[in-house]
Image 1: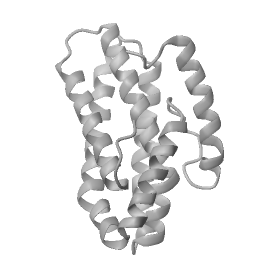
Image 2: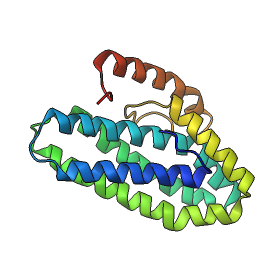
Image 3: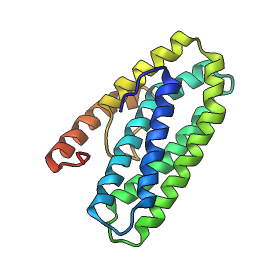
Length: 186
């Protein structure tokens, strides 16, 4: 969940972690509880990552990068699509034939988003910000991920200030539900 380093290093470490989980999903055969647990793990990581980006990364993109509003809006639209897929997956039984299609769609959407961030957004951010600003953003991202929801909430606000006010409460409720159900403990 928290890797250390500046915002770019932190988020790229998250990207590699999710890619590794996707590789494990692709290698699985059958429709076991193990797959359900891994999809829960991916969901938790993607939701935490997205919420943290929405709270701190995209506002910084708007502030520091020329044309940042358009970049941030595009990234937020990507998040919206991913969150809707995650919500559909959450409602889909392990043996539902649509599940593998949703997983494939999720992996494609996330892969495209990651490539765009790493090849377009991150280089612009690195050029526009001081090392100190990037380090500060990394700290904020780590704190946000620790308090973020663990379940998709597609209708929740994705821009400040509303997202910063509501995410910790939703995160608390999600973590309580996860504790009771044992979700994310595999």
